Length: 64
Image 1 (cartoon, one colour):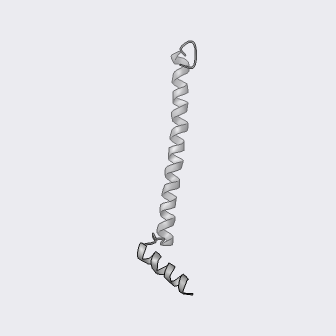
Image 2 (cartoon, helix red, strand yellow; image 1 turned 180 degrees about the horizontal axis):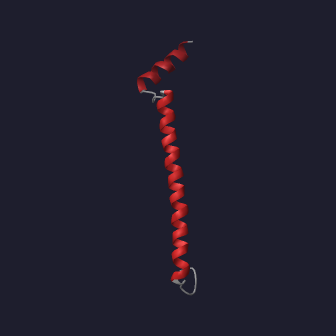
Image 3 (cartoon, rainbow, N blue to C red; image 1 turned 120 degrees about the vertical axis):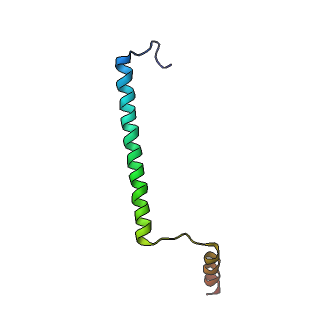
């Protein structure tokens, strides 16, 4: 307990609602960023590098 006395419900409820509002808006922004990143990856056709492709690329660089 941070305070020596308990806060009244009139103060506690708005504080909790404000926290939930800010927390929820942060979650929405994070979800939007993830969605936009997914769209970007699909539009550009970016794929993960596979092990075999990575080995081939390294071999080609060392042969030069």
